Amino acid sequence: MLRERSAGPASAPRSRVAISFGSPAAESGATRLDLNEILIRHPQAAFLMRITGSAMREAGIDDGDLALVDRAMDASPGHVVIAIWGDEFLCRRLQRTGNKLCLVATDPDVHEINGCAGDRFEVWGVVTHVIKQVSG
Amino acid sequence: MYALVDVNNMYVSCERVFKPALHGRPVVVLSNNDGACIARSNEAKDLGVQMAQPWFQVKHLERSAGLIALSANFELYGDMSSRMMSLAAAYAPRQEVYSIDECFLDFEGVPTDLQAVGRDLRHQVLKWTGLPTSVGFGATKTLAKLANHVAKTADRKPGSYPQPLAQVCDFATLAPAELDAVMASTDVGNVWGIGSKTAPKLQDAGIRTVLDLKHADAAALGRRFSVVIEKTVLELQGTRCLDMDDAPLVHQQIMCSRSFGNAVTELPDLVEVTSGFAVRVARRLREQRSVASAVHVFIRTSPHRAQDRQHAPSATMPLPRPTADTRILVVAAVQALRSIYKPGYPYAKAGVMLLELQDDRQEQQASLDLFDAPEQKQPDGRRDLMETIDALNERFGRDAVSIASAAKRSTHTAHASRQHRRSPRYTTRLDEIVTVRA
Image 1 (tube, each protein chain N blue to C red):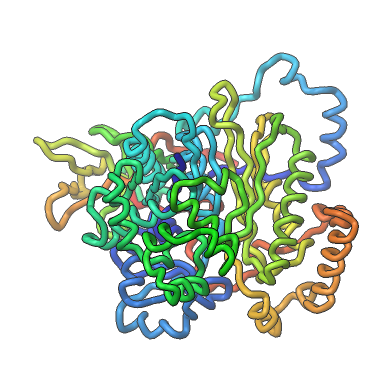
Image 2: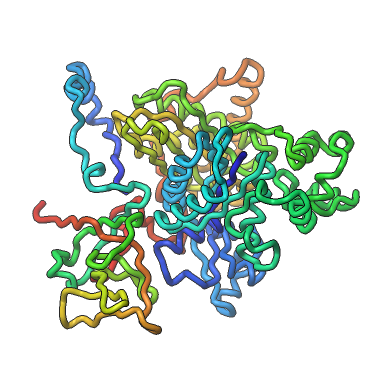
């Protein structure tokens, strides 16, 4: 989970000055936009994972990205999901083929996982957002 | 009606959410410095590993039976606990967080199908957090605890109880004869508040099952043993002796929490409340001559005020070594609070919980350790100081002497513990989150 760190002692004088001018937010009744509230619909079910690999690049998911995962949502075909396959976590798109659900990568060279015996998977959560660092 | 909700094998279950390879394998979680087994998967229980058994006694099972041992990861358990607790809180008008992995819910005045509520709750916690729970309903807290034991045992050992009672067990759905049959097949030592010292004495007196205890003469047992047992018998008969937030009959964990009459939004107010809680739990810890390995702090807005912005965070501070020192416990609690507090939220409740209590004589032995930080030494002098503080408070009233400016002292509590087998802190450290292959 994202947690706010407390300000260190060095910043204490500054915040005291700010308090003496009152809180503009409180007066206008507005609250500063909070990414937690914008991105996270189910806080108790929200988890962050780090992407490694490039088999989902065409879905906008690159090596090093942060995936925001929601376990509360029911996974449907078309969703990008985190799945458990064997003993490892995989990021793939859930897809319906015939009457079966399978996991597919956007990279056509990567084998699909069809859920048959010996190739079973279990959906762990739905990827709702991907956060990528572009500078800094 | 009360419900008791708890997570099955909490610490192991938390580990399994983030490491699929642990499913179906025997797993134990070890205490500070990898000394003893403080949590066991069902598979580890089946191998005969006992609760609190020293690690060196079962270490051979690593090679012979594939036993996996992990160091305690209290930051992870604390965060997963707060997710579970805040989900459970929304199901009933009142919640009492009783330990890191269990809470009572009070359904007083809620006319509904509780069995269905229990199934919903269990399903939601499992889906949202990955943690498997057991839910027990009863007319008293002691009965709810017993129903929880039945729910968990029926699930783990098919055939031990009727299968419909597995996972979620509501005693109110049983006919009197059925409830008696359940009680008759349950050993008296499984009753909340009957410790391992009392159970054999009761058995000597011919009280072997829960049903025997329920039918016993409460007043006579009260005279012969203790008022605790008298109350336990009355609670088994359906007479409420313990209300929500009443001190538990036995102190297996130490915790102090309070709902606020008016919401609290300012950090200094919460620091004061939290420090006060930490001082109180520290005193209770020393009264029972124990030491704690970690401090868990939670604050939360009211889940029943949908108009409020909701925030229900918690944090767990592992201590460099088990301690009962008020100063260290207060500093850790305030550090935890500062790391989770966000301005602008109307907090309705706060609490401080001490985790993994152990006898302080073991701790003295361990303090001969060569690797202690200098400030961690001189345990005797500190013990004297703490006893003096307790004595002064006893004489001049609670909190006559307290820890001033404790919050300003810095300690290095987070990283010092020597835990060689600790898993990543998947949900509280960005550089330790799960890596997923794409």
